[in-house]
Length: 480
Ligand SMILES: NC(=O)C1=CN([C@@H]2O[C@H](COP(=O)(O)OP(=O)(O)OC[C@H]3O[C@@H](n4cnc5c(N)ncnc54)[C@H](OP(=O)(O)O)[C@@H]3O)[C@@H](O)[C@H]2O)C=CC1
Ligand SMILES: O=C(O)CCC(=O)C(=O)O
Image (cartoon, rainbow, N blue to C red):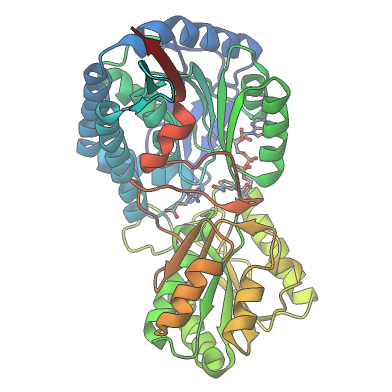
């Protein structure tokens, strides 16, 4: 076991210590206390917003080179420490060591990307409709951003919200997920080590009421949230009521269509990755495998063999291929949905039983359920665990209809050798991200990220699209 960290809020460039009434536990071994954790409230949120407001003018007016340099330096530090921070992430969240280090490197690359974007911010010069008049557009910082992040990407998501906010001159109050505050704190500490001025980033650790206080605070100009659809809908209401900008990334019920003409081995590997890696705790995970008649039985048998062979265990053991669920709640949610699917007539092909490992942890057997119908709860509600179900279809047209038959629309994939079907799926799948012969999960950081229907709300996150939400456009007219 490793040391227990003593976490603090960050307000105005200082670590602010209060009581630490909660503990962040290692989901692979719940005897291991990763951190003792403060529980912020209105007083801390008020102080953080005051600090962010006071820092805003100086940061927004700073040379873009200053903002770029801080992000670039933070990226270099994080990349150098990716093994140490990645280990902390895996210890706290439960994804495998390779996934934890990989996510940390991804966060470092996001910081570097937005270091470059700070220098590329640009506007337009246009001809006016009136002779002698000039029109310019340019983008300006908005103010204080409230960022509310989930536990499943405890460093990448804070990075992809903080980096564009900072690159374009905004200041930040962030509330990381209650399950994974230590990983988020490591990132905030590195930003300060890289020279971030006081008050530009403030972090309040605590539970949902901290998020609520940020949403309701009139000193916060914009909210970016990632998490569940239910909480997200409330966040949007709170923000819109006081006309704050809002951006939400929420759940998915992502389909992977496997056509008869697909390469079987490839289809199985794509499904295995999309459904089970990161313990299925990705909003982009493929939880519905929509399989054409001709390949269905071979696909289910081959996938079941791979799923059964997955080595489930301690996230920090390099041999582990799938870590535990993040929490007891998430573990129980998976088992509850497996029961519901069984009750509705689904056939558990592999998995489904409780796991007893040597260490006390929140382990879930990776589970494949066949013979399910599109209207069953298992195919309509987000499970957010290592559970995938198969739906048998006769034709491409039926596959597309089933793929689109949910209230979410984040990511959708197809495995096929037919260019016609691949192109049609790209055009007609009702999802923000479409994958051909690739897993539904695992996206690039330099391109837009987001979904349709109930998966997302507001402008896209990440890559070159982030400038939309994290700046406001001014149109300037002049006559001389
Ligand atoms: N699309 C995605 O990327 C993700 C989707 N999810 C989905 O959400 C489900 C539950 O995960 P969970 O982390 O609990 O998601 P939540 O939506 O509950 O939490 C996301 C973030 O919002 C905070 N929060 C909770 N209540 C409020 C509130 N009233 N106002 C403002 N902020 C609030 C949480 O704090 P705290 O952690 O302290 O409760 C956390 O920081 C998963 O099963 C999955 O379906 C989860 C993570 C990511
Ligand atoms: O699939 C990915 O790479 C990103 C997934 C994600 O952002 C999420 O699960 O919240």
